[in-house]
Image (cartoon, rainbow over all chains, first blue to last red; front, side):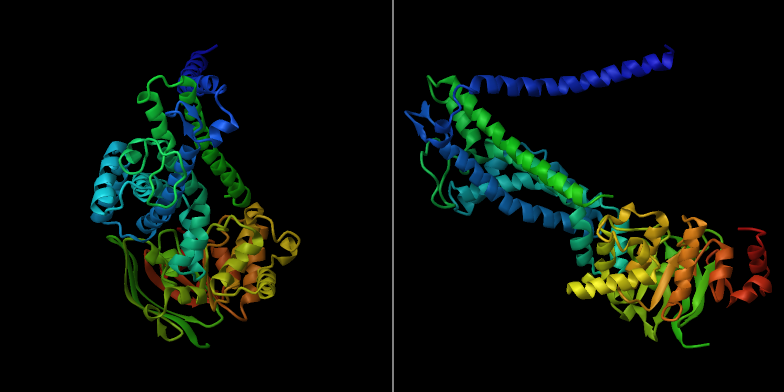
Length: 282
Length: 250
């Protein structure tokens, strides 16, 4: 073997090992959780309310709570995020102010989630008097999700070739028609991916919901958007740290359900992307 | 000759600090095929794109002077209406990654035509005029990106025709195409002559000699000479035109 070939081998080996080191912990975590949770998972666990100081029963209210929070977050953050990204990419003048806004949005995604939590409590719960409620929680999670959604949408829009816009405009389409029919359809897969990523994060966060919506123990379903709810990540935190003599398998089972929920969201995303890719190619 | 459809008056164009077009005064007649020849960077494409205000898509574009379309200053015409009337075929075949049918129907749909039968007939008529119908009639609903380069370019012509323009601008439409495809596009242009004004920017002097009736020679952003094509290619007035068409430079 000559030197160039040996170098190539070494490079491939290093790259391969790096990939292995990245995925190994993920598999280890998933395996560990599944192994410990499998005994506790049952329909009863998923569909029953927590009983006996949460040491028995199920996590149904927490599952419903988390789903409510995710849906509510979609409702607020998706339209707002996509629309502001469209404005920033397609309409805003490329001046100092726009650049400042773009940099701020990127930086916002680096803010610790507990800061969002405290901000949400100050603004929604106390100042706007929305109380500790689903509404406050969704709004807080939305604010946290927005930077990621905007950034993903912005990148997806910018990835659509300039020539598509040129074609559409040259046929006499208005700018809005061009965006609606010639840009958005091609940016949609990218937008979806970013959205699902940010929503997965929203579903799994504890800090933003800690002071804005999450209930320690509330074994019933919410009746309105001003109700408190239990949520999976907070419930997991509670049963892992706050309850003495908690059977460990219930914590693992709760973690398992949370992971499955996030996995399902990503699966929907993957399926939608494949559908889009079948239809549009360039 | 017949009536003037486009007229530019002291047209000056800048991109940033670059002065691209210098004092262009030009009259284009209804239903003629006007060729614009000249070496690279002489401002041919910029001139073409100035006519339907596509240059304004670029940030540092700046324009002085007036352009009239059908006696009206194009500043006073809505961009989308102007571009519907003055269509353009780009240098590289630019099809959208949707079906052949959808590519052609895109324009009419944008302009409010929803009826399926009307759309069908518009699509067929446009594809026939662009000499593409026979080749694609059995696969209208397959992806346009699967067509060959020459077919894609004729699809672009059909797409432009579908919005019923009065003027068609061609920006070096055959630069990436083989001789047979080029021939088909020139055939289509000849066929369209009766109903459309066509402006052909080309690097290929032979194509200009074959396909146009009048021809303008541009050099470094100036309009050097414009005359009947036969005269431009046999006895031009300006020495530079003579050198260019004989192939001394460019």
